Image (cartoon, rainbow, N blue to C red):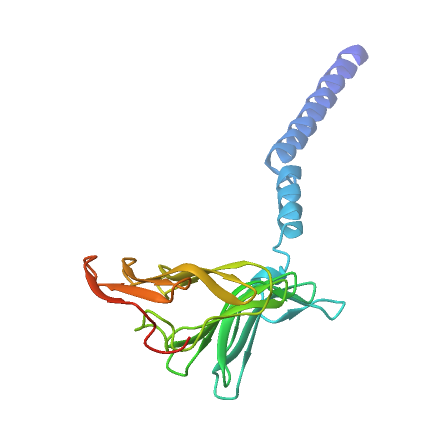
Length: 229
């Protein structure tokens, strides 16, 4: 009789243990466990926030006090007076100054290099100056000579060495070309319409000139200059 009672008690205890185990498994399967992948993605997202870049900023000055990127100066009315791009406080690339005498051109390593245009207030080009390494090489008065074959305001050269001058219209087509030696024009110089067609030739060896219409027909031939160059 005692053995039967002990056996029945053992079965009851075994059944209770199985029930507790099932309840624990049920809790484990329904509870939320943090996803390690989600945590990593959130951390990466926080690290990869955009970092400020001076190239995207206007009038940026770095920790050394140097100008970097594009800088624009305006007056109190909001008019742009000066525009330039800097690398380590040095002007590079396109530059314009728009206060009083207006001008624009290009810099290379902080020095004027290439053509600079000088403008009237209405935007008409007054003068074109060509620079190399910050030194002026030649000056070409544009608007004063645009309607003429022989320049009434001479193209001037600043250096004694031979210089071949090429000057362009605002539309980038060639306007004037010719050789200068010891600051004087020599040989044949050509003048062009804004269309690019030949407008005239000047022979500085014998001081004569020929003008053409836009179709290439001779309009005038002269055995001497009409005025002193």
